[in-house]
Length: 138
Image 1 (cartoon, rainbow, N blue to C red):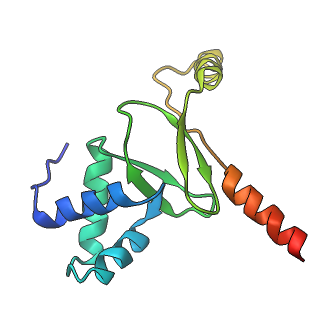
Image 2: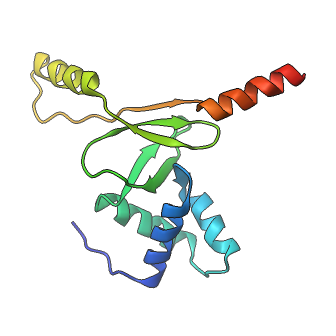
């Protein structure tokens, strides 16, 4: 593992990620930092996020559209998320059934040391209610 220097830019990216609600793209985080006139470039944001994810300080996943998204990691180790497609709210969840299924499926097919990623995308209660209100208003 490559250890990144702890620069002020990397710390500012870490702080901005911690302040973000849910998962955000590197471009979105960069826009926030640009609006604050930090002078931090997009490449620096990408490098900082990749380093934070590699060290376990940030979660990283791909959106249904294939974009890499990041959030400050609240839990160390393997875990799963429910993620709102509208507002980006993320909730860490237990997925015991998924863990058992993944191990059993791998073993049944002769695989060892199998890994998996499970993230569930949907609408949170607030966004679902707002959408319902919009439909009712139409």
